Image (tube, rainbow, N blue to C red; front, side, top):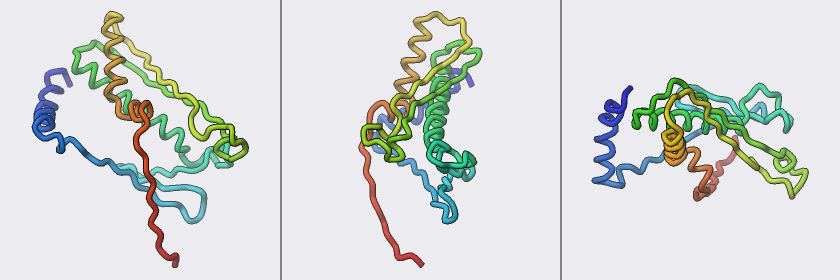
Length: 172
């Protein structure tokens, strides 16, 4: 896809959103079911069922997906798609690119071993390796815009409002 095709595809959406801001508000959903035989959760991805379980550092077998890995994978996927879309829109000559995310966890927090150890990632690093002959100012602009428009990056970067609800039904 080239810049003109991307802009033509997105133009009616942008116009609709300018005219009716409410039409741009979409609720995305994820759903999973807790496995009744093992410590795992089957997550519906829209394409298949992904089974998430404990990371081996918390006693897991390593056979299920770790939700921390899935978070980093979501970041890589979103950043990669955003990078490509922005490059296309800018007519940026990108011969190829890879995206890598890595994050540091202290499992003492997750396992309740230390109240001082945080639960969750202490740091996440995102790296782009690109093949391009573009000048540095265009590369800088591409990365800046990719950060700005990457939904997962911005969600992690600016803490969203979170809430938890519980529905309880009698077992059996």
